[in-house]
Amino acid sequence: MSKVCQVTGKKAMVGNNVSHSHRKTKRRFDINLFKKKFYLPEEDRWVTLTLSAHGLRIINKKGLGAVLKESKEKGLIKKFL
Image 1 (cartoon, rainbow, N blue to C red):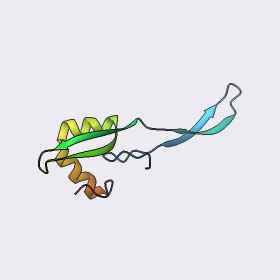
Image 2: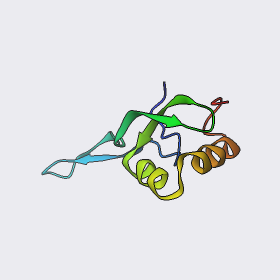
Image 3: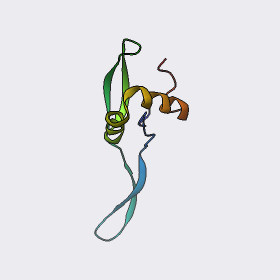
């Protein structure tokens, strides 16, 4: 499983660790991902998504059905139906 939010499409970013002497070494900035199960009443089943905190707020705002439809159109979710 890749570390990508299935709602927003957020991924890890790349940057630098900067020491006191200003030497720079590469590092990753991972996003705040977690797995969450949602009940989809239209289909009478549970759906498990890998979400960022921002993706969870979007689901609370728009609703699960609308968000799943948008994510499917964007190609972030391969199969949920």
